[in-house]
Length: 298
Image 1: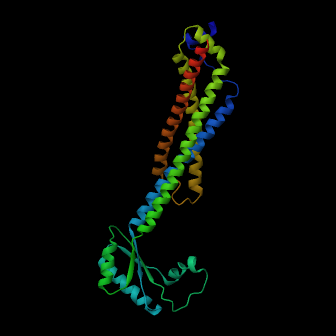
Image 2: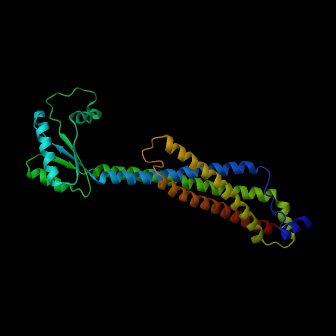
Image 3: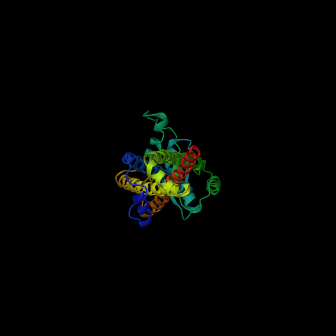
């Protein structure tokens, strides 16, 4: 009893020992959970960033299909359409898709079948620029008596937005599950810690310590454990994500630049704080309820 009291007054050692039997496994679990939580957050952030890139690319593009009656008209009709579009959109980048590439676009539907030479495959023109108007382009082509369809890629944009939302939802859902599991792990760890240190708790009760004071000891212990475990796990997730971004072609899902990595690292710091707070809250609530239950039994 004197040893515990002197530890409390002089601050020579913590009232609750840092090293408790079987805590190494708890540390491993916390670090792995923080690592997985970091991956889930980075995946969700990457999906949001990738969606933004997709929307930016599609918002400034138009595709024009020049309809032909015979394949022999391909060169004249597509060049005429390009000249009309150049006059209508002087600041845009207008390019004719080569015939070979136009035929290649049909392979996913027709397979490797050799197409007849006289098959009137529409001529394709790609337009890239700012503030493009599909209706304006269609009006200009109609005025030049050119049969064409203008696609503003809105259908693809809607599909991409839906895909991006699902990817983000998956990442956030996994993150929530991991944090919930972290809450459960800390509840179990707090109960196990209180059982392992019941003698110290009894001494504290005998010297007049209140339930809130004892609960705060477990809160501090759990918060420190959660913060350190989160720091190790999240730093490891950031390093692995950086290596994967540098060595693999993720198409924008990984870190494509310094600003993206820096902003995601700020999010990881926030996640680490949330992780530590969840650990502390779980420990505090569990310790308070357990102490109240024990007092009722006395």
